[in-house]
Length: 112
Image (cartoon, rainbow, N blue to C red; front, side, top):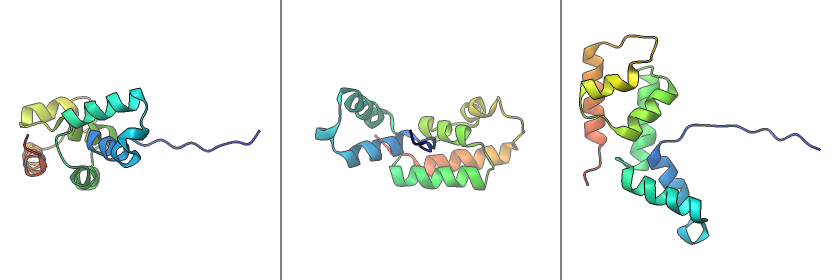
């Protein structure tokens, strides 16, 4: 038996939506269709913007990947909401940085 190398990466809801739309709805099984329905309803930004946001949060604000993905999935609107996602972290982020993160999220939010 040959060994297969498996890698894993976290995806934001908009990225999942893009992947499923690429496959095509007619080619999706029932679970994938439900997932597509869910991400269509709850994605709060465009997939391309989500990727940019993810890279910005990782590099400029030095957030963990898991934190950054959850922030993009939920797109908090206030600093207090944002702090919920960062409460378990080992580092303290300045309030001014939190305000800039919220502003960045607001700029990239899709209005529904």
